[in-house]
Amino acid sequence: MKLLQVINSLGAGGAEKLVVDTALLYSEKGIDVDILLLNGENTPLCQQIKAHGSIKVLSLKGNIYSPLKIFSIRTIFKNYDIIHAHLFPVSYWVAFANMLSFKKKPIIFTEHNTTNRRRSIFIFKMIDRVIYKQFEKVVTISDAVDKNLKLHLGLKKKTNRVQKIHNGIHLNQIQNAIPYSKEELNFKKTDQLVIQVASFTAQKDQKTLIKAIAVLPENIKLILVGTGPLIDQYKTLVNDKKLEAKVYFYGVRKDVPRLLKSVDIVVLSSHYEGLSLSSIEGLASGKPFIASNTPGLGEIVKDSGIIFEDNDHNALANAISKLLNNKLYGEQIVNQCIKKAQYYDINLMVSSYIELFKNLQ
Image (cartoon, rainbow, N blue to C red; front, side, top):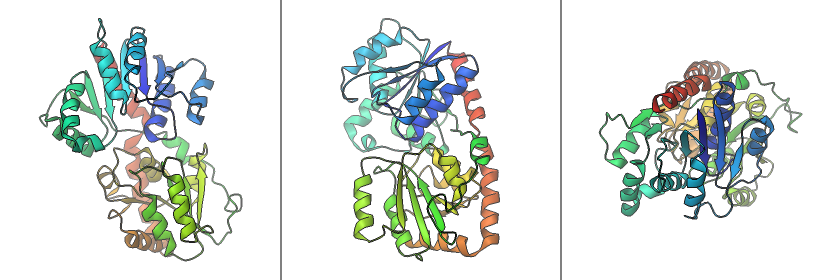
């Protein structure tokens, strides 16, 4: 079996990390897998997969939104048995490439989010219904993603075109990570650390977390890991609020498991998610996990971690304060989170995908 995974880039996002992690596991299990990028920027994830040696990374030049990508993709398709596509605009370009091919290939598309801006625009809603018909299977990653996609496409609740497979992570990498001391991270022993690992995009909500940290005591510090188009805006917000001594921007890191183990609380403040890898890592970290009660996130975290309402920085600040001041409560939350994380082992996810691939051959 020759499998091609297609994604926009290997930047610092959850879907991108998932492509790399699954490709490595597919290769271990004897599947011949390559990765096609619309943007081949040499990121840390790109370097990681290239260092593996047996997985090719193919890159296209130019703007990822250029329809000319269709013709390059069509040429590449002929060398593979199955295509696994992720994100927009990859979804459109692989669908059109397959339409224009003499020999159609089975395409699997993984839907990673509960919503997107296109769904509120009528013309894109109609185009999506055409595009998604080109996919042999659409994989949804959570109950909320599954429900919202079927509603968007006008599909029946029970349809064999859509299959749900939960995302997963390497639980052992998180659980066995060695923490840094606070001094190694240039903090004081008396500092209490909160972390969020997320891209700086409109989907995420670092703003609410920054506002929460602003009303908490001076020894409570925030570490923000990630990058993205809005990062400068948030740095300006921190400067304007004079929070430079409380909020720290760590950029893209290769040591996220160690960082998660080094802090007191893990947070994911976000307006919506599919099934966020950061949320699973937070659940598995051995630290209390707090998340927004928003689509695709609240359903995962409820009954395990702590949830707060979207944009409510006071509720978030109160949750952080309660955890830091009540050790027994924090231990209870940690135990619930670790138990929930066991459902999201990447090996279970990969086995489900391999079974799907085999059924399509």
